[in-house]
Amino acid sequence: MIEMIFFDFDGVLTSDKNDIVTTCRYVATKLSKPEKEIRNAYEKSGDVWDLYRGKVTESAFWKQFYKNLIGASLTSMPYDKFEKLRKKAFGSTKLDSKMVYLARDIKESGYNVGIITDNCEERMAVINEKYNLYTLFKPIIVSAEEKTTKHEISIFKKSIKKAHTTASNSI
Image (cartoon, rainbow, N blue to C red; front, side):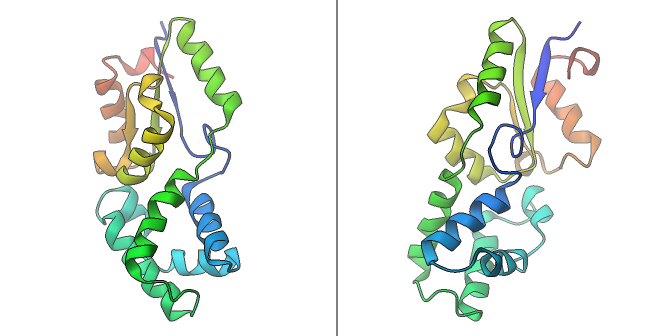
């Protein structure tokens, strides 16, 4: 019997397909620069999968991103101001209200709902602070916290364990 329904976060519960789109669009807007150039600098900042696996900190990744922006003459902003931009970029994530209502309806129908996401701890913490996701979704499994991604079975095993259920009782 199904008792637990897991949702992906970016592209399912959010209006953007992934965090890179949201972040780069926000930074491009704030710096008044082309999004494509910002994204190029972001993608040269390191392996995003190392970030999602918790092998690289958000702070280290963003320091490299900042250096790439400076090197491409896309900003002259002091680093301390740029670092504050990080949390604002994370907070700019918009939820897909129809999907959140669907999750709420599912929960009100007696099922448990959770999230499994390839994401960074800091970004998810900022988003949870803004939207209070933990009141609806339990557990929220963040790849960087678990040191694994959805490409590996271990995140799913950890998810069902934290949800106190079994694979056969989960979707």
